[in-house]
Length: 221
Image (cartoon, rainbow, N blue to C red):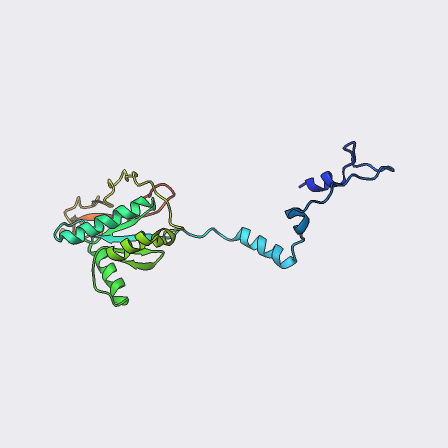
């Protein structure tokens, strides 16, 4: 790569770099950033660190996980889930929403997480980057104080209007193996067995993969 600065500083009046009796023209020093900083030579350690940083992989976006329920049995719980969901949509971040009423595995997962922290089971629950933020009251307080925005910094983005073509945004589809009946007939053994591809509701859970402007769900097996 050519050094453009050397050409400007050492170039003669006629624009050539040749020799001769004429003294090279020099720009007068100015009391600017360049005068005080000059052309610094990086020490070997700094150069090695620069190359190291260039080779390091980019940091993985923060995972934003929200445990909710779609059941309206308890009005307050359903309203809290809706309010937290609306707050997160306002930040245009990709949210891995896990409906515990649609899959018992999500309920067991959340219960285990809360028990490990000595907390009672409640909905909704928000996790950012593996850190438990809390329920609706904690999320609302962080949002009003402006701390939630900083907490979500580094999360993958997503258009709030994006809707998955596969599941319509609900993250579940009827089982393709048993059609949602939860049972399969094994001809070789002449018997009926439980389908192993779906949950207790005959549904298949779609895996959430965050992208920059949407999610790319694939069926879990």
